[in-house]
Length: 319
Ligand SMILES: Nc1nc2c(ncn2[C@@H]2O[C@H](COP(=O)(O)OP(=O)(O)OP(=O)(O)O)[C@@H](O)[C@H]2O)c(=O)[nH]1
Image (cartoon, rainbow, N blue to C red):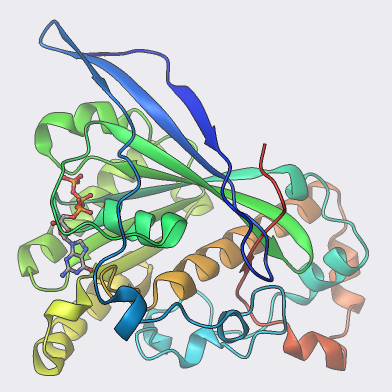
């Protein structure tokens, strides 16, 4: 199998109230399978699920902290248990807060961090990304061939920050193509279906494969249970116990989401952005030898409002 050069495609979205627009980029994947060339366009935008807007309105920006002081505290979120959180602090590291206030974030504001999303076929990786990036949901399954990506811009502590979300194929036959895109990830999101225990069992193998291409000490891990809407509370709490165990073992932060209803999807990606951003700024400070500054920084009262989450950057146009 031979993968040809991906071509980026940019799209301008209409201006959104209060928050502007977001940039979405994708990939045309050209590959040859068994000598036969297949050209696979990025999946077209899918219509929102019926009932999404009526019974599950988009959460108000204030709730999730679009550029405001977010009342959302990730640690109090039901799905995010303390025992499976990467960090239980509500605030950003004081060094990070201070660096942002003093505009000392180095190249982080220009940086695009890579996030890969892996997991069994049909667990809902594409739907998760599409719910967040396009606010759409498709109930029909269309397998991802190789890889696809979306770009999302955020603003964290006033600093622009972008995540490139790589959606990889879960089907065995496309795994070797997808795995060539694992390298250079700053965060790995391992998705399993909350209603399929085998998909949880396979998460360790997905992680092992992804870590072969990345430095384990330098990557943030997230374990995400999908399709929460299909579980009864009793089924969910049973599965949650096992999921928490796995999350603790692999040192990943655990979330449970539904791309159908949108439950926890934005909170989750804001959290990924926040933690990735924080890691980037800390690394940047280390590089510039600014370690001593951290020791003298005190969190002032304003900092208490800076919860460890991000907001989507909504500019008026995208490149
Ligand atoms: N009810 C429900 N169905 C979901 C949810 N997320 C995904 N699905 C369905 O599950 C199927 C698979 O979703 P995809 O997102 O394509 O799965 P995937 O993990 O990207 O699959 P591969 O591309 O093969 O790796 C589709 O039929 C989706 O509609 C969810 O949150 N709730």
